Length: 188
Image 1 (cartoon, rainbow, N blue to C red):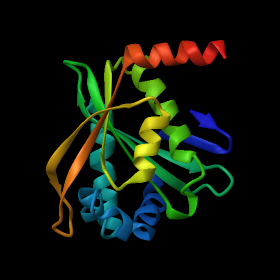
Image 2 (image 1 turned 90 degrees about the vertical axis):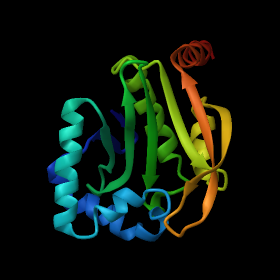
Image 3 (image 1 turned 45 degrees about the vertical axis):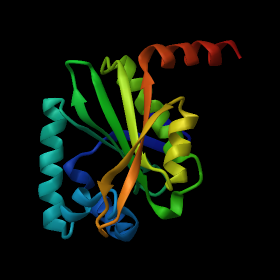
Image 4 (image 1 turned 60 degrees about the vertical axis):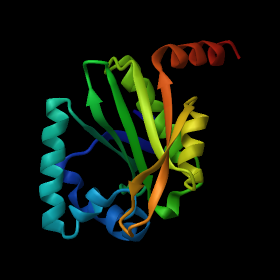
């Protein structure tokens, strides 16, 4: 998948150094809501083991980890995960983060749009979910610009790394809604 000068693809072991750099440079920003990823990538060797695990999950179709690569620099600028895959429904959750230098440029919104299309058309998902904290304006914007509907706020549902208990917003998008939105966009 591609847009502008950005390539979206599944992560590989060849991404080790660039992926580690993305997380390491953004560690403080990511630690509260991507605590597992941050904890599993403290060193280059830890990151290698984490990538091996992720690649195994990709192969088992339980979890799909995509990277967004700036083709001008060759660097990974964002990560988008299709996680909590439940093929019995079928549904999945999307998670994403971006290098601080690339924030507010619409990259995650556009990349997520292509991942959504792939999830509905390629992976045959019926529903996608995005969970975010109410103060994460950027994440809420990504969800809303991609047609997700706020389904509810679960109060005191998540404990951050710093120990704060916060509310979590649940956004959902059904395949039928997505297809209807696509038809409307095609007409315009």
